[in-house]
Amino acid sequence: MPRLDACLECGQPFERAPSREFCSVKCRKDWNNRRMKRGAELYDLYMAHRFDRANAQALRVFQAINRMASNFREEDRTERAGRQSWRRPSAVLEERPYLRSVTTHVRIGRGTR
Image (cartoon, rainbow, N blue to C red; front, side, top):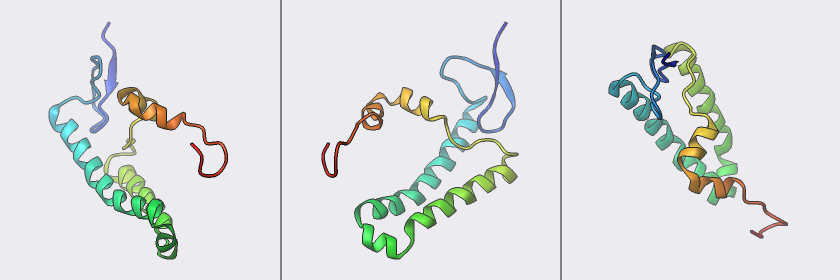
């Protein structure tokens, strides 16, 4: 019996195939376009927070990042009927094994790697 899953974008059930998370090309494109737009908005703020810390703190950049995430979630609840708009961390790490080494890296002391 085929396994049915819900499309990550529209929520409609579809027959799941390996590595398939969307019911159609349109849903996959809509999902990825929203992620790219949101990611572009967050990228500059995060990089400023990471590499221009004093200025970013004065401008409350990290709070802005968190407000944006809350706004994205609220949009998802209202416009997308509460569907999740992010992928499971395990799925992302599985798809991009090079990130796994970054997440499992242990720092000992300040400034050492």
